Structure formats: C-alpha cells, structure tokens
Length: 211
Image 1: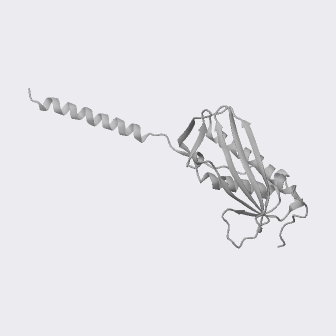
Image 2: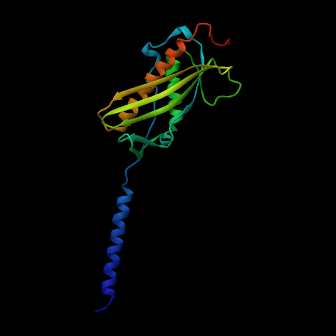
Image 3: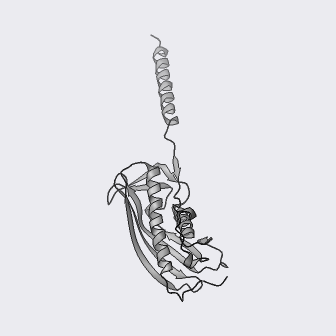
C-alpha cells in the first residue's frame, strides 16, 4: 500500500486541529477597562463655604508596588492576590486616585483651584495633600478596604500640618468588577470627606494665600 495514503490523512488531521485551536484563540475573552470616579457633585448640597477659594494641591499619591500595575488586583486571602488580565485600569491607579479625590474636594471645599501633582513650580497653593495608600483592594463577595495615611502641608513653606491615619471599608456581595470599582470610588469619597474635615479644622490663623 502506498505510504502517501497514511501521510495525507495525518496532514489533514493536523490542519484541522490547528484551525480549531486558532478558532479558540480568536474567541478569547475581551479585556475590560475601568476608571475610578468622583461620587460628589454640586447638586448634592455638600459644599462648605467657610473655606471658599482655597487652592489645593493633591499628591503625590503613593501606592503599594503590588497595586502599581494596569491589572485590577483583588485579594483572595491575607497572603494571596489575584491579578486579572481581562479587567484593567484605563489609566494609572495613582492618577485616577488623585483626580477622584481632587474632584470630590472641589465640591466639599467649594473651589475650582485644584492641582494634581506634579504641578508647575510657579503654582501657588494653600495646602498640599499627600496620600500614602496602605491597602486598597477588594475581597470579592466579602468587602472592599481602603487604608491610608494623608499628610497636609502648608503651601509655600511645606510645613507639616498633620498626619492622619484612615481606614474605611464597605461590604460587597458581588463578584462584578464594575460594582467593585464603584464601591472603591465610594471609599475615596469617604477619604475625601475626612481630608476636607481636617482642612476645615485647621486653626483660623492658618488662612489661605491672598490671590
């Protein structure tokens, strides 16, 4: 019997297998991208007019190295994390945290003069808010946790006006990333409110810069 009778079916099987594999690869799960977002607006009546016109610099924001990546990181246990290739941040997490806090503070302190680190050297600010994120992730189906230390500096002199430890959490019973990111944004609202309160509680003689 001609050996070609065996070779041709083998080739056909290999080709068919490759086509199936290519088809499976072509149907891979699409990557989804998410943004943190401010959860306050002027319509909510949250404004505090006593410090109107403040110039606030937000940043730098420092995050743990394991969070400093495009993929969204969730916590499976105290020592195990999941890095999801198909659910990612649409921009760097540090920038997203900074802009979200800034927009919340804009409402809480009734000012449009918010600056994201790094700002030009000639920029005059009344207060700088440095945020060190200690923990910011979700245990899907359990809770979402934000732990930070924020420091308030006087604008020009860089005088340290106080350091504040914060811990916030919200329960979650879902595995959905959109819901998780929404809850993370709400935790940043909690932090923004505390930052606003600490600024409002500064001594009256610590007045803002003249325009």
